[in-house]
Image (cartoon, rainbow, N blue to C red):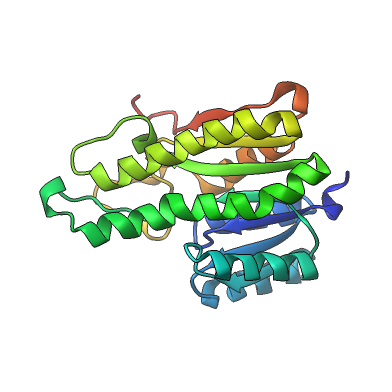
Length: 238
């Protein structure tokens, strides 16, 4: 199956890795849809990608709303074709002392980081199983492996996401769907992180380099699938 016949959805698109995933996949021939709460950045990205000969469709969608997500995927299927690649990249960070985290902060983070992944997977997996082909990727973090102080909300959601990825890999791998969890162990170099105290480019992950690894995962031969891998800068301690 050629890449030109495949449709990829990036759930959670903004400057940084989300944009790099869209550029990398369209550059490889995929038709790509990007989901985000608004379309301002997505439309800017679409102008760039489509002018370069790619096919990118930006859509506004609340990923935590099952009906809204279903409507967005239905439109993607209608305009681009059946979804064969789905990347859950949406997340939210709360870094506060545990006793200072309000219940609604916990819930909001849990909904976008984990529940949205559940809803997305349930929506696209039936067709992937029918075709016996597809890739479902989840963007994880260091917090998926160990919960640090002040990261109770973030770590608990990322732990759940990792568990979901493991379960889905075991259930749907035999049905032709490649499920992978990517642990991003470090800070991604973006316009936002450039302003962080003590953060320099040589200590960060480059979003384009990460996106290339995602592409390799998506295109892996079924005889040698990766279920989980970790990515970090060469200078990162682990």
